[in-house]
Length: 533
Image (cartoon, rainbow, N blue to C red; front, side):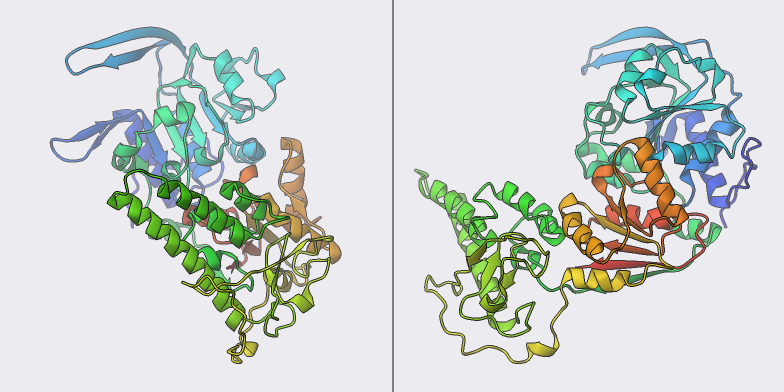
């Protein structure tokens, strides 16, 4: 058991858990000393820290506990802000005096303002929330202990109050804020609040957020800035109901053809059914006139032609040429084996002499099953493109099908939408969260839900619309919620959720964040996570 020194903050109306008190203690220490000792002769000085406990275990209240315990700490009326230009033997320092305010500024995604207000209502802190341009001017900063500002108007807000220095500046879930060219704000100390801190070094950062963090080649220093309780200590401090993880093998997973020969970002698009995004990456052909396989090979052949025109064929160029040939041959081999050994996804019989690719989702079907309506995604008026087969390491058309395997008929995998509908089933006693990184996934999902008269909502739009969507989901008006990273689900409290459906494979940090939407303090039922692969 971790030794806790501090007491429950007086201005917090609900008891905090042990791991939250421990976080507050460590945050207070770092704010007080601004130092992290690595060895007896090496230490870090910092004005920034990261609270990185597991998603769902009350980091917001830990942060408010820090503010509550230090709200009466004395501060000078002004503060000096230094701008340094440093060389090895010469440095220049420009000093600007700013008005020091006792208020803490918290920057949050506009979707989370209502949630933060709920948490602040559990405290005696004086606060206000700003998410409209008309609310920015003429704020009495001395009247509040906390100001919440939405990411939608933050840049304008920071320009208006650029001559102020905040007591602290807290950024909630910074990696998902979608705030380009972020303006700077002055503060005595800065905090980043995220359950997946290393995500900040896996995404492109711009503006002030990039300035706050050590550069990529010093990312090891960033690890020392993270205040994070041991995961087992956190889980023992508050015991969540169990979480089940179920994995489903889906038929027609196009990413299997391209695994090992395209970037992970393209594989993820294929798993999500974002065919238009893949064609945009390939920059070759259109999905209505060219098969995905031909588009990939055509792009590779163009690159091959460029390399073969090089005047000097050094060893690196020869290796690149060989790699292109290997990728093309590997793709041909995978497609040929699929046609040879796998049944048609619709009729479960061997593919005919003329397998086709449909322009909508680019799945492969036998000629007998192809109509003008896609049997998988239900798109009407699709184009069908004959699939030309080549055996690996051969330029000859594959015309002999006498060696079809007969063992596959009992091992056929259901396709993704069939699995999705089976999982959803009767939604009466369920709360289902369907997650994808791409809106294109939801096009076909919505079709299937509407065909079955299943009510759903998608989290998007203005703050008011998002609040109404979340409220409808929580109160049972709808039991199915569609969520993607574009509309920033990180930090949401959706502990009523019974089932999470991950529509495609995602990065581990995203998986942690998505599951963290449901696995939160206050959760009372078992959570089942369905992973479609």
